[in-house]
Length: 303
Length: 111
Image 1 (tube, each protein chain N blue to C red):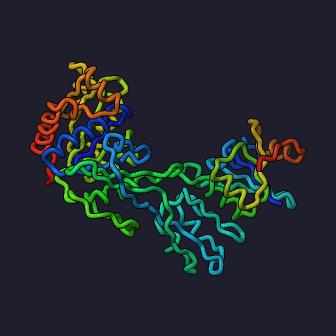
Image 2 (image 1 turned 180 degrees about the vertical axis):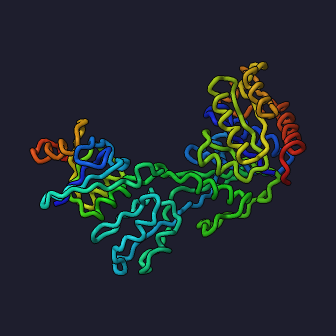
Image 3 (image 1 turned 120 degrees about the vertical axis):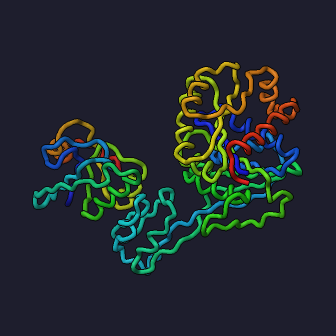
């Protein structure tokens, strides 16, 4: 089963939830945790282990000056402004290129070929016998986060490798390459990287906090999962036990509140030193496991 | 020599536009013949890549001097590669006013 963890608002506790869920489920399942927050991945801080890595590349055009006639067809075709045709030269702005390959196809003189350009990497590690951590890392200054997310999900074995993409590094055989549970930890927001992350998931856990900001952004995130048609449930982090406004919002959208993590000094203490509260407070492992079974029974259809 | 002024409307009396890539019109003036023409910017409301695509319009029309308020980074790279000189006009006057100031030599060259 594939569970995505998203939130809308940053700092609500997505990674905390995802990491504790992964740890708890790994006691009785093979779990792959995928850090899809590729602009600032940090789950490796919870699960420190040696990793192997492979570069993520995108195909970008290069022009053969011997064949190019500066006819301008490639520049006309490019919707992203990546190709400017000068009098006797072609300017390619690589960071604007979306790697669609259209310029190569429309070129009447066969002057364009595509070469790989490195934009990030994917890392694979095995912090525990039944827990694998896959991390996507987008290089600084790069913008195409969804490509790195696709490759991270593919490396996790949960989605097919995107067309034309290859891992240049031969990853070692991993113990639990066939996972029972795959957990995608999303970036905040509701833009392309989040959609790329939750797409294909059987269930989305929306982690929120009972503040006006948490509620505002939760509603945006609910809009995304409703549009994508993925079953979802809400986890309230740092809950005061009342959460009236969040409850009201969930009622309006027929969303179940599947867990409340209390605003608790002990939990905060564990968090603050970078620990996992389900490790220090093992009763939570049972709660996360029960939650997983509840999700399987009520929401997520997938195996 | 062809000069382009970014403009909100389609004539020499239209107000000059501060933005380059999203300028509604490009007014192109041929200094030799004195003729002017307005090019409607198809990319004024496009999603992205408007800077280099607008630059391409200028390049394809043989523009050598651009008068505008400011350029984005990507537009700048394309305009620079094309060797087009850029002068900054940041008042709220007309295209004619911008041209006058350019001919008087009172505009700052920014590229």
